[in-house]
Image 1 (tube, rainbow, N blue to C red):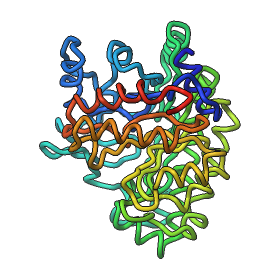
Image 2: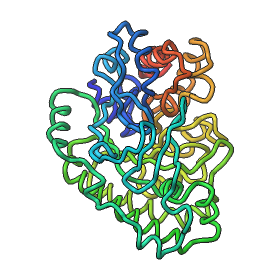
Image 3: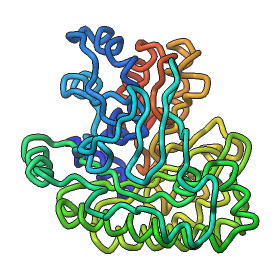
Image 4: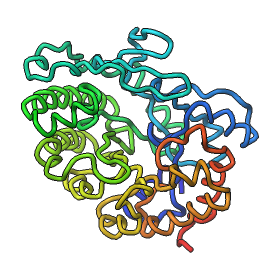
Length: 378
């Protein structure tokens, strides 16, 4: 099978020749730039730094020789969102994003929100007066269709595409994490005003992109986090009342505009929301954070596997950074057995591989996937 055939069979709940594998097929299943040269060296490839695919997360773009060496099956379309065409940099490690939030990266750390535009005042009036971006300011389409057509013509990879779809995290970034949690309990007027505006803008931005390449990609995905390590960040009632209607608008528009499979990335312990995701049209769940409470893969497969595919599952909380190669191989084999039956599974690490992960463990992940992922599964 070709890479694309393999992925699309799995996402159609069919068993391909082997379990599809991913590194770099999304912005949440790749590798940080600091680790990338070591991975190339471990693969006996020429060593160089990876070109950043996402500025504030320090993620490496995956080169074709690495894809071939690891035999991964998904390639990411060129990024269409971000600040790369806007001069908003304040210092080397500080910038404003398109929405007006200021990000900062401390030495040796990751970027975090340093200033949220609504951190002081959270009223519907302030929402109205805020300098909101225009939809066309959120996207970059010059040369996009030509680039994706070339990928489709010259390769047989399944092509993935990032789309806008933040609801919970939009409030966290624009209001501040702690204040947003308080708003969810006691400031519904502000929540509705903010989410009405940001949801409309995200849908309009997605519309621009999908009009360009919605028929050229195989997978589209959104990102929004609702879970912590030990449980959901909000109650099911809060989600249904305040957040779910906006996710419904975003995903409904996407499903109307493209036949590509819809994947949603949602970290942490999110079991209570998975049925809602399926109801609203999500077809693939990422990252399956197996170390979080109530995210046992066999139960997820049993409860939702008829309607939902799973993407991820290899533990990055402990096994990938701290485990031996034997333990990594056992983890991979376990996840394939738990989630790979009858298709519906893409093998990848739970979230992006960080600087603590030995390159040899990364190679073991994919070597084991090739060995143990062949159908019929052992």
